[in-house]
Length: 204
Image 1 (cartoon, one colour):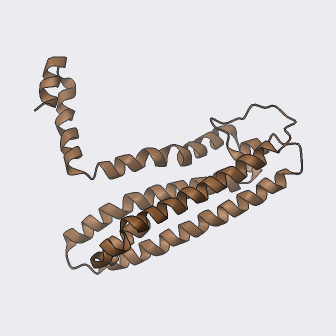
Image 2 (tube, helix red, strand yellow):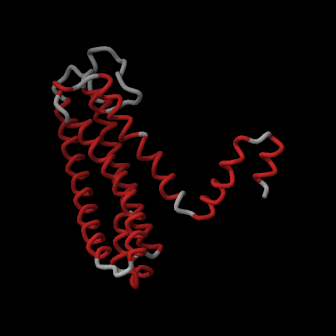
Image 3 (cartoon, rainbow, N blue to C red):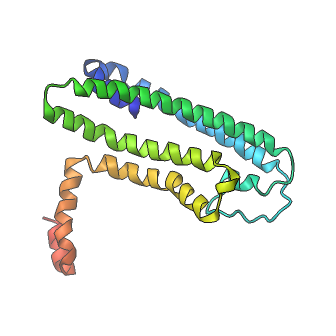
């Protein structure tokens, strides 16, 4: 998404060439393939860990740091290395996003039109905020020292990076659609009406 924004704002005349269907399919395949390999490596290594404590994970999903707490073998060091590699990959992606947005903001600030700058910022800033929330909380969840770990803190941090960003993304991008905003605006005053009036309002 950051590359798409970069091309749209910094190279608008080349957008059709740089972001054609082949480029989009290549980027999607690279992202899906990398995450599939990442998941397979973690899953295979997790199943090879001997668990000598309780088999109850103190989390609402099987988060890797929580599973490592149950391991009684030194083989968990392999998982630590996988986490280090994962963090390195995530940090590389984050650096790419930051560099893209630096170029975007430089181009936006040179725009003569205030309306154009506002439109560009309103397009980019929500995505950057969601990505920053995901990256920072994921880093914290996987790299925080055990001394500050607690059940409530682990739950909150995991919720922030696993539930909030996927929930916000559709809202951010769909609410930029004028037709959808108009439909929501029509439905808002209808909430206080009866069922018949509600149906009438929806079919206006």
